Length: 233
Image (cartoon, rainbow, N blue to C red; front, top):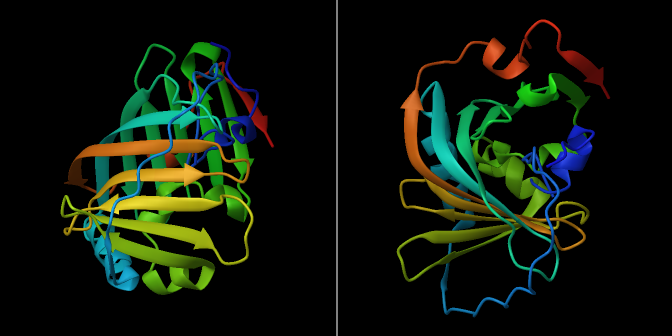
């Protein structure tokens, strides 16, 4: 597969990115049209309380990690082949995606700049993210309910599996079009679905969440090996 030329191209798929997400997805061929999901009866619950439990779950320890499966579905088509890896979050605003596979793909955000490194290409791309690009990252797990509800209209419903499905829609419109989180009563997010303005959908499924120590700055700033080509955008 060809590596996308910039973080912007990668994010279009994730978080269409993303970011977050975001991020580091590669071109895939559309498959057969996707079937529309069936609607299920659900009872509304308090969105603020759900967001508060999510933030507590991801901000109560110095860092949190989990494994993920990421898929991308172009508008009107089925999901492409999944990618897997490990996510690290560190409050207040640090993110790292380590992708499995021989290419050595890593995406990080240090609170200011995003970095995309592909070891196989010996290339690092550094980019300052716009607000709509930051919104594609799972920083929503770390933000306060008040800050999120000021930017998003929220609807939370209880599912028949005991989880809460929370959908966030930007009050000012724009991109991403929506973010939908599936959260356990503990606040652990099991799934994050990002839909961009064009209707493309990126889905992250999270498992094996673990608390960890504070990570060094180099985990998010990324110091590439000698000889790496560095591009700034």
